[in-house]
Amino acid sequence: MKKLLLSIFAIVLIAVTLSTSGSILAHAQDHPVKQDKQDQRINGKWHFVFDTQGGDREFEAEFSVDADGKVTGTWGKAAVAGTYKDGHMVLAFDTYSDEANETAQLKLDGQIDDSETISGNWSFSSYDGTFKATHPKP
Image (tube, rainbow, N blue to C red):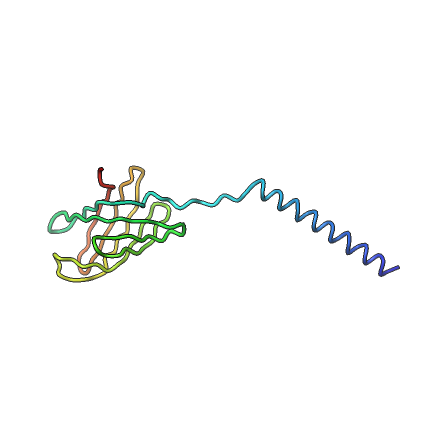
């Protein structure tokens, strides 16, 4: 008799578990969890203007961001590497400067605003300053 009661209890427990799991799964399908989509505003061509001690310096770049926020692209002939999330871009990659006659790491740290202008700070070797970047006009 004790074995019979334990068997019935086990069957009821399994049935309740399956029933509850099914309703949880059905509820999850009715209300899927929303995942934030990666901000795509960084994608495309950009025209950078660096504020330097010697005056403005202009550069062209093109970026692409994946779903995880990894930025790739080009800065002149250099390959870009960095991250982008919630409008904040951080890049660090090696590039050559004709003016400085050296290869060094260029670091950019900027924020994109509602008008799709990126503003921030740059550093290269012993040089640094601020920058603004916009999408070039067609």
